[in-house]
Image (cartoon, rainbow, N blue to C red; front, side):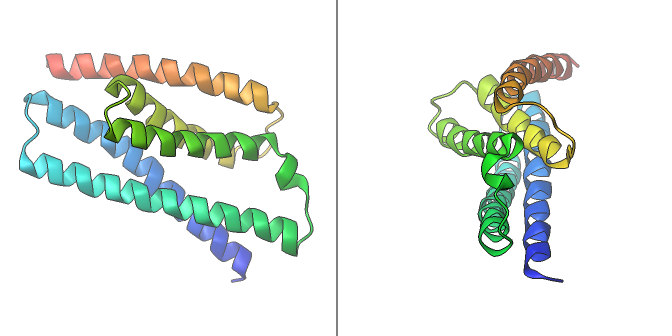
Length: 165
């Protein structure tokens, strides 16, 4: 296995941890809200999940930077510097980081923070697997912005349904 394939593997591992962690964060949050009290075991589970999310984030940041460096510096490609898809994924990664800080400081409402995290992880993953993407950066970002609010409405509906049971 060459260096680039190792970087791709690390990137995929980071995505798996991040998307899985973002999905589980929503599940754990709902479960904790069900009885109206976040007990010690639920808190431990959430903290373990957030650590997993951070590991995934660190893996995708470092492997992503290394993959772009490899493609540009070693293989001489310039397409990564002009890829709308890559730049959109970079913006989504930045949103994940900024959103995590804002959530931890309680400067963003939970409905928005949860939707930003969930949508960003899943949208970046979708972009990473969508090989024939022919949309501009602006079109992708408009779709992403709309998706954040659609996902917020869906998560809120699920929360209301689950808590009513």
